[in-house]
Length: 438
Image 1 (cartoon, helix red, strand yellow):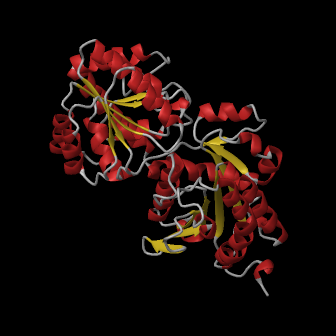
Image 2 (cartoon, one colour):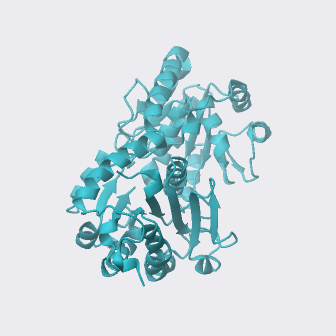
Image 3 (cartoon, helix red, strand yellow):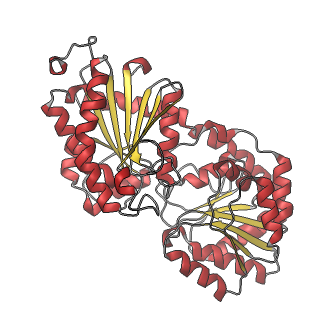
């Protein structure tokens, strides 16, 4: 029903693809989802709070993907990142985005005979979605659009007017785990999983893997990336490194956290456990730069990367590591774990939203907060390379089912239901809507 040449997708998000705009998985999600939709042939617009030094509007993929950086005038006063001045930016989105969206993008798309799908992400966009719905209703265009709002996490759920949002939009989320959390707020969303780019399924260079492992110089080379938050169980990871060392297992951890204050507590805890930490603040551009940097700090137990890690480097790290510690206590979906699996890595994930993980078949599922659980499984992998190899093979097989193109198939099927639920009126042809005339 929603054919590429007759459908326009509009994605609204606080985070986006700019380095300035990325703080977690949301920026990666909307970057890859918008790109995959455009590659499928859909005209796709992505609106987000963008880098103030970059153009307000850009187009790529032969004019199918349009990037719109919003609230740049505020971002100039908040150079640290997208969440600097967060409330001011949310207020600006609510004030300026809905009317502009309807007038400058949705009306022209409908005038061309297109159905418009608007997908808002996270609490920052929740009120804006209701304002978009109201503007479309008063313009006589609400039945020509599908409006959805997606929850990737439970952040600021208390700030959402759930009755209003559920009345104006169809609610979505990324896992059954999140669906059950949202039940507590009196709503029942549909589930469409997160995805990974198909390019992540490309085979990682084994020469690069060997180079990274040699530079790490330890039987147990661990990798952890994510926000500095207690939910991510950083203390469990640090304690596991200390316990492995105490047991005589040579272990090193390469870690990349965020800017959150909790990072200070994590590093203090590492010092208390007697671990040597090297701060890697020089940008690492490629594998050669990574191996050189690791060798320059060969006496460290923990390498704390504070510079930006390029996306192209992550698959090599996932594949090189004995284990990627995505051992969260609360994970709505677990994108890092899935990315590690796609790269042929061994993912240690939590037991919450990571529904793709099958314990000891394609991943290691951590059930407790006890560091000894990580220690036991890392020790086993270091001593049984056949187990690790089988896990890596099964992990990649599973990850193929979660590429964005396959997730889009699921989304389009869900939209068939949403179209009936929202009473979508399919266009008869250009200029068929009286509300667009005059």
